[in-house]
Length: 129
Image (cartoon, rainbow, N blue to C red):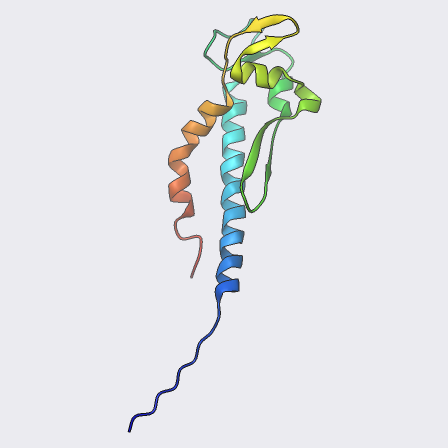
C-alpha cells in the first residue's frame, strides 16, 4: 500500500500583491516617460507652430501644466486645467478657443506612440524571483 501526503498553499494574495506593485511601478515609469517626451516636444518660440506639429510656447505654461497621476489601474497624463485652461485640449485636438478656430497641434498622442514600444518590454520580469 502506498501513502500520499498533499500540502496546498494558497499564494494568490501574494501573487496579486506582486502584480499590483509591478503595475503601479510600470505605469509610473511609463507615465513619467510620456510626460517628459511631451514636454520636450513643446518648443519655446514667439510664433505659432505649423499645424500638425507640437505647439510652441512663449511663457512655458503648457509644459509646466503637464502632470500625471498613477494608480493600480493605469495612469492619466495631460495638462492641468487650473494652469493651462482649455488651451491644452485645443492644441491636441484642434477646435475653437476664445472665438478662433485652431488646427490640431498634437503633443500627447505622439509622445504616447513613441513610448509604446517600451511598454511590452517593461513588464518582463517584474513578478517573481
